[in-house]
Image 1 (spheres, rainbow, N blue to C red):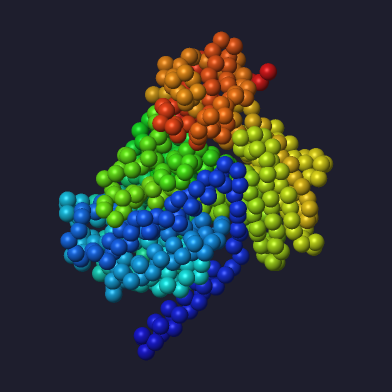
Image 2 (cartoon, rainbow, N blue to C red):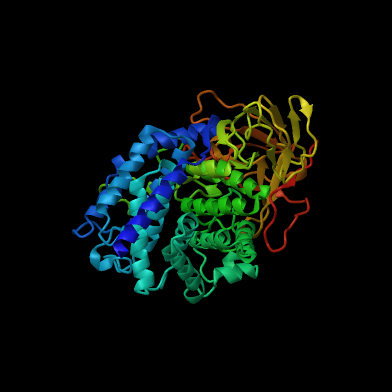
Length: 620
């Protein structure tokens, strides 16, 4: 009888999962520079990685055979790949990508153990074992990424096989941690507790009590193992870098707090999560939009240690949750900053690789250079960042545009075409064109059924002090920096034109970067690349901030890859040619985003040590 009931429950969950996949999905085609990067990532990574790196899935079949030494987190690679593939598929469905993702799922299904175990370690090392070198395996962490990828793939494609593999993985973790009462994260840094996040998502979707038990186990772990108790520390307003464990992996565990808010509606969860997010943004988010210094929070955004791509992706995932939680346009500003700078700045333009470290100053090396120790025969291109960086492109489909009822919110600006479906079934297409973010102008054209009359909410960036908006040539009033401009009764054929304030704004440095300044045009961080400045990127002239002017700079036709933005700044005595951060260092040149300056302008500080980045330079 119990087996019959279990089979019925499993079948219902599978049907529900498939129904979820058939619900409204916003498809989004990117054009311009971001479209080029998305397409390169699709063609040269997502469609090829599982086939060119068969060890990604074949290692599961060999786990009980003698094989090469694996890094403790090797099992995460397939899950991170699936997550990236699922998010990109939701934006731009294709038969080729579905075939690649289904292949990975099918291999995981065949390799999964009878007890639901979905890892790469021998029976003697499952979930709580050690590697050949004596390090504890990150086996539960790998299950988290596999489960998240399977969950998103099922949602995107309706894959029944993904649902079945996922359900068995839940059973495995439930048996190990709840029935057998093993501890989470003992002597580790937040990797096990990440399962609370995926389990919270699954409980919201299907009410599986096993998942809720694992979520509760995660909260018990916050207090018992971490010592810092993220939930209560966040509730008290304690910055993340002052908590007990501050490695970047903990951000995925912290996503469980937002999950608990979604499950319970309890405001204290929202407050705790928002406080933790804000503390990271204020004290540990670098001028590139990237997060982490040496793979952890340290309370100093001027720290020049490595800014790991995985850490930035985790920060963007946390920010996506924050935007969903608060509907705050300032959070969308943060996602825009990270996407146009840290994300595409980490990607090689041909889409073949990402950096491990995307520094504020120095040079950019493919992750295969810095963390090649993660590669083995059969997966020579794989490492944590190469499989995780592509997720950032798919995330644009999560935060870029959203629908609530009949109203549409636009957070992502850039050449694109997005097809959406409102709550009542209206099919609406928004087409964006223009130079933004490498120029001030953007046009949004609406295509909708004749009876559509919803509202369009336009994000007005906090850095754009003077934003002009027109509707069919008529001025629209009320564009306030750091807010949404809601325009009612939008109709088919409406054309909206936005002109952003792209004058220079800046972030003055502190601590080890005192006496230096980072410059921005709109959301784009500017960089001094030695290839544009006679080979110089160090020992630069000191610029007078109050006298700076900016003008377009000529780019030689023979230059490859050409920068997206090239300008010349001058204070009347000294001048430099600066490019966009994404283009800096792409030829192997050294660069810096921190320029020596006479900081005679007042520094505006927030509470604490962080300096705000959107103080504006006086304009002539």
